Amino acid sequence: MIKSVLTFLLILSTTFLFAQSEAQKKLEQRKEQLLEEIKMNERILQENRSKEKSVVNVIQQQKAKIELREKLIQTNEKQAKLLNDDIYTNQLKINKLKRELEVLKEDYANMIVKSYKSRSERSRAMFLLSSKDFTQAYKRVQYMKQYAGYRKSQGDDIKVKSTELEAYNVKLGALKSEKEKIIQEQEKEKLVLVKEKQEQEKLVKSIKKDQKKIVADIKKKQQEAKDIDKKIQKAIRDAIAAENKKTAKKGGTKTASTGTSSSKIVLTAEGKIESDNFKSNKGKLPWPVEKGFVSLKFGNQPHPVQPSLTIHSNGVEITTESGSSARSVFAGEVMLIQVLSPINKAVYIKHGDFITVYQNLSTVSVNKGDKVGIKQAIGRIRTNESSGKTAIKFSVLQNDSFLNPQSWLYNM
Image 1 (cartoon, rainbow, N blue to C red):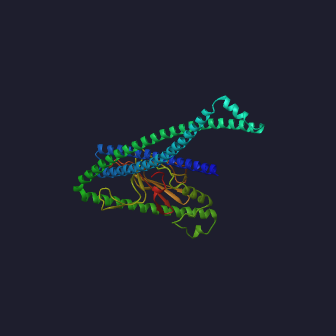
Image 2 (spheres, rainbow, N blue to C red):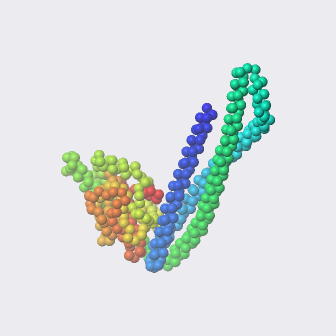
Image 3 (cartoon, one colour):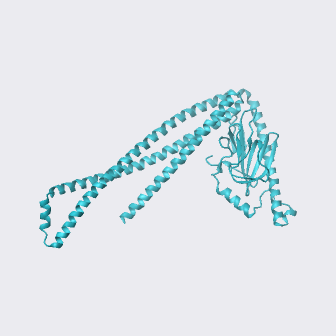
């Protein structure tokens, strides 16, 4: 019974340590990604400053960098907490091993003393010769063998426990060093964050005199964004109606002649599988660019320059390097290619009744009806000549309803 309980506790402890290790690994990967995004942001920010681009654009990118820095600090805090848990668990193991070692050493010392007192061959012989009969003599021989074996076993146990204790002490030292390193990184990141926020405040103050012009420009851009969203929704509804008409015609139903729904895709058996596959990968999809950082989130949020103004976005904007390509986040079929303006094209990819939209492309490398694979390049992302910014607007919809892409993309 005791053996079963000890085995269970050992398995539980191993599982816990493995889970801790996996969590640390994921946090380390997330930290690497955030650091890469911060580096890219800083590089693009410096390029924009050197080209004397719009101060508003610089402020927006500076705000994105501040948010990334805050995420990095949060990741460091999570790592430090996990390390604290690891240190506590290791200290408990060390304390337990020390107690076990003390008991073993005390027991071993008593055994050595007892063995020393009966060390002579004569005393052993007398012990055997004083037996009443052969059976008792045999039992005494067996006892002497077992005693010698137990003594050796105790010595081996002491060696094993001592080695194990030494290993845990080394591990504890490494964990403490790692924690100290993360604390130092954390302090450094916090100082940089304070500096970046101060710089942001200076930039915002520097454009106060142009406030009316900036507000008007923001409102104009917001209206343009709303107009594009309307075009997208209309295009999607038209495309859904066309898809449903095609599906109905293949099935030979009356729907083809009596009209089709424009808000919900009628799924075939194959379409249902595609939809379920897409849905099952929620939170695991790759980004629509190889490298980049989120410069505008989904939903309603205050404008970085004019907090009194609210920005609404039906997707996420991801800023990347000049010359970057957009790529499909999942396997699917090109449902539509739309020219939103002479310099802004959009690609719509269908995944069952889910649709991903890739806006702000200067060129497109796929055609309507093409089957595309995950991470396949579908076009070149446009660089804005006035701001120098290269950004893709990415949206996820189920039928004609916009969803938050940040819930679908990995580590966003």
